[in-house]
Image 1 (tube, rainbow, N blue to C red):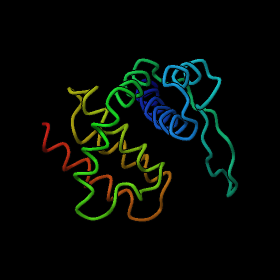
Image 2 (spheres, one colour):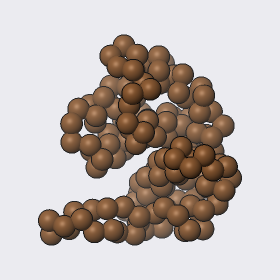
Image 3 (cartoon, rainbow, N blue to C red):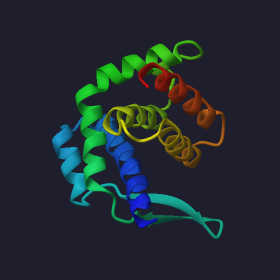
Image 4 (cartoon, rainbow, N blue to C red):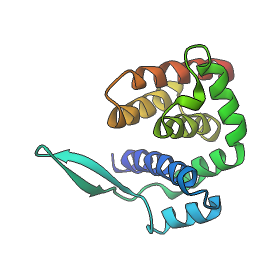
Length: 154
């Protein structure tokens, strides 16, 4: 179970790194370095006893974190075009909240990075992550978007 949690943490850290890059415009190599050295990221807010507390994530799988983040860095324009084409049916991609865009970018990257991982696992991981950030229809949207994307590449 510990190995699975390291993968979950790596995915969340990759989303945090993509978000940090978007917010700061910092060079991808610097962002990745800061996250892998623990200088930045690796923390989440969780509700504990009805109060939000900062919780440090257990060690993440550094290989998966780097692979996902580098895939987004190298292919962001392509990933964004894929997402625009899928999402444009219902909403404007440019109007999505940045956190949601980052989740979707990393999820699409994982389809390329982890080609042997079953589609259902990838989709479930990112739908669950989306639930941690959003209470509305966003998890369903992530499910639909990733399902449509998966049909085009698998």
